Image 1 (cartoon, one colour):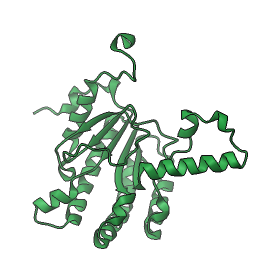
Image 2 (image 1 turned 60 degrees about the horizontal axis):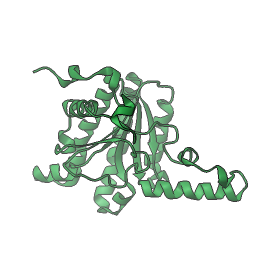
Image 3 (image 1 turned 90 degrees about the horizontal axis):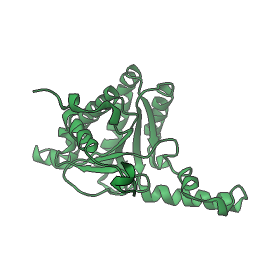
Length: 247
């Protein structure tokens, strides 16, 4: 059976894809295992998805890896996730460089363990010269935290006389967000059948096409990504205008 990849129009690729990688816990439970088992198997889905985006020529891929709310999960699961993150990043850096992929991290990284942050910073430095896919990991991230931090920094700049409050608009506010150096996502995918955005890139997803699939994250593979992109390519993106105006 021919891959869906060959049905994709390369001229209409989303420049930025964002993914909420959901379903690891339920997948593990279905296997009679603990939640960490699902997270370990989810790494293969990350590899597959990153590779597919790099091959297609997608410019940006943002993965919601760990939210600020996830810190409230059982200590054993959080510790295991941090260890998995460190091991995975260390192992994957040579592959990222081989495939010309640049790593970025967004989120409240001050909450991450020192060892985790050290490995992440090293990987960011080692891939900084790459010019292909930009892989953005959202770690200890939540959109409300991000917007709160942006408002706080805006207020400080106004107070210090660095910013005229009369000049604050959408473009100005965007420059205070974690994603200021990236274009907004055009396609957001959530796995596992849930139909929520879960505090993920709320400001940036204003005009993104949303795609929900029942596939649990550890089962998500290239063909599932191609299916989402093909669905994206059938949609008319109007940005508040009428079809006739786009015409």
